[in-house]
Length: 247
Length: 169
Image (tube, rainbow over all chains, first blue to last red):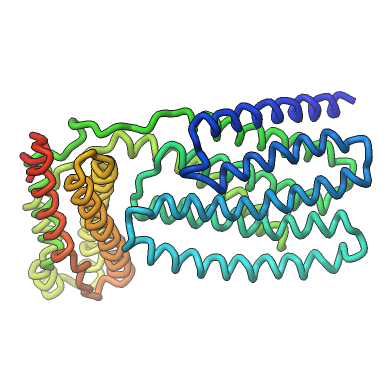
């Protein structure tokens, strides 16, 4: 009973935060820069509302829930693409290399997802809800993998994240990773643990909503003259790099 | 086994996100850092390396070369950090109302990103030499891109009339 109350609390908190995020995105006119993320947020909000409406009907709730999850997952991929595009927008040279790395990673992750489906699919072939969980595990694996590649490339290339872009990627990353752990363990542990997984998922999603909202509201840093390079520093750097080249 | 791999992947992802969060805060405070050219020249001198190879026993030479490579890696890391700082500055200058400044800032940012990439290559080559000290690999060919970066920074400084930037060139 207490577990159910906690789930209910996070469910309501999530709905309120989703409304606040939607208001923030509309206020920021986020559809201009982040059309996929804007759609993703709105679809999630509508999905939450539809789940609330059909909560009393288990049959309809099942389909509403999983169809919404499907849309959310597809849009999640598009959000990753949007973040990728935004980060590499001003770096055409790096974008070529990053696109190659991304394509290869996507291929490897796709093969891995097929292996998950083939491995777990045999076990749950006659159970629809468990099969759906396995499909979600496979797709979330690809999504989490792509986010790992995105964060790794950005770190290695020393690229600058804008607040809003970083917030979107971080929030999505937290949710996708925790969701992946939850769906992976849920398909192996008894149904009695479902409430605990529901709490874990709700906490992760609430955290993500909080991250998205906060980073969307943060003002972007303006150019600070004091950060500009000093003559001596730049000259030394120049000389040092030239020395390295001539080795 | 498959479950374990997926869980490890998810945990790695969470770790990476929090590392990125921490390094982003650190990155925002980073400035250009000077490099001691004399020391760098001494540590990367191939003539010194040839001399040491002739005079020292193989094991002693390998030990010494690895120490030199460790120090060189610190320099390359610093250069890579400096390139990242220039990229950040270029990124911010790109939003300038002056289209010439914005265009040049884009070029600077692009050139700095190429240097960053070359530093990664140099780092990889140094890592191979660290593993096999008898190898002599040529570090990244940075000159053309770095020269372009320097010219563009100079032009950006002139366009902006910004004292610290123009003075830096």
